[in-house]
Length: 112
Image (tube, rainbow, N blue to C red; front, side, top):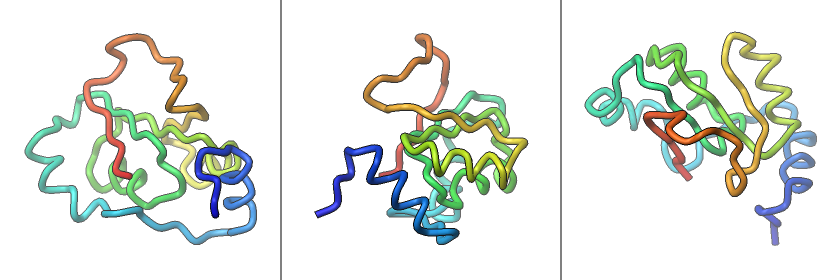
């Protein structure tokens, strides 16, 4: 059984898959109407557990939500995403031990 709570599991998974990004549960197209109705383009957004899903670059480039931080547990996937999309703000971290100050974000998205 996969050890989803283990950082090594995710690093190994991303290291073994060169490029097979996918969106868990739903993609940007499905969430776009909801986001457009609830979130302003100038609001600061945190995307938790971003992985290599197309959602993050779609949110940034297609949606125009450039004031966003994309956050994941896996160093491997964040390094890969930083290479692919250097203009975006990618961060490594544990969602159970976040190091952001209070009220750093207006919106938090975790679509898992």
